[in-house]
Image (cartoon, rainbow, N blue to C red):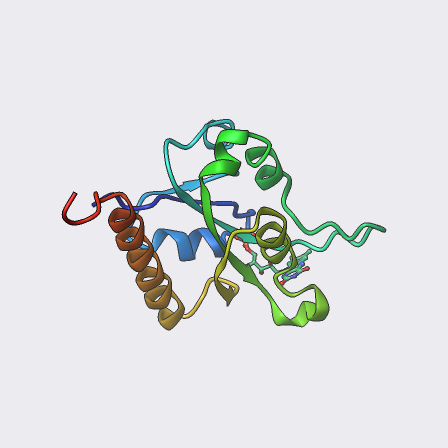
Length: 145
Ligand SMILES: Cc1cc2nc3c(=O)[nH]c(=O)nc-3n(C[C@H](O)[C@H](O)[C@H](O)COP(=O)(O)O)c2cc1C
């Protein structure tokens, strides 16, 4: 069964990367140019932190994520969004992930803080395994045909 790949952005502090690398599936860091400029060959999941900029628009979506989503192929293949944030940011908590989910019409699959607890990692693995199965089943021919 195909393991749905996860594309994430992580800054120098590396909290999201730490979470992503514990998922035990193919994960790609959009901070790396090679991945940021690539196009995905099928369904994939986005994991993004939020970064409040402090300017008027208070834009929180990392530029690398924006760049990756400029590709129509990537936009079409996106099946769900996960977010890492920090509740100290109050009303801006998870703003980037939630905005992408809203604008793309894709479900928000999971939200956690910082690098995630061991429980968060286990939950993230479970959610992605269930997604793999659902995508696999959706591609099987209907019984009796
Ligand atoms: C300057 C700055 C701004 C942030 N803005 C937000 C925010 O608006 N909303 C939020 O939920 N978390 C915010 N965070 C928390 C980060 O999204 C969170 O720590 C994330 O795990 C960072 O992942 P990374 O270390 O992989 O880049 C901010 C963190 C920093 C340092």
